[in-house]
Length: 230
Image (cartoon, helix red, strand yellow):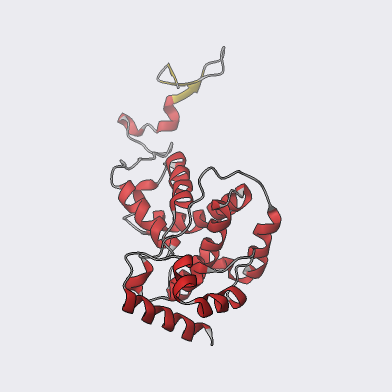
């Protein structure tokens, strides 16, 4: 048995039984020999069966029926070792978070991001910080080039919170980056674009620049615009 044949067998079994939902225990019950194959051969970098890789390979109609375990009351901890195992494995692929989207980049971004998200969901604060740092490279590109995400420009606090919420809530074993994109797209519809003015703009009579309206209070050191504190 190899990975492809095991996935094909699971697809066939799901089509025959048609469960409303399924998880690892379901596979262990209805296909114990396949479960043992996964247990022995399809492993995560930090231990355990790599169910994300398995469910990602299933027919799309079955992927959304997968139920992952929840981590309620998770105790927070820090472990650079867990994170470095993943980063070292994909060290030559981290560039994918910096480059424009294509099929190959999307795939490797999801593999790396999901691996870090799963550790973060266990409570590893270091993993959460690392995945936030990596996805920000991609999000900055979305903000600059994609009008559906561009409204997030300037909303740093809300953006940080939305990323953290996505990490915590992600359950479906599909594309994490796709889930993140859709979340930002829908949440961003209520945001008003922030207009940033340059101090070299000249909106005042006589060609006066914004910088010319700013002075410093010699007594307090406060900045003033037309005599008002800012």
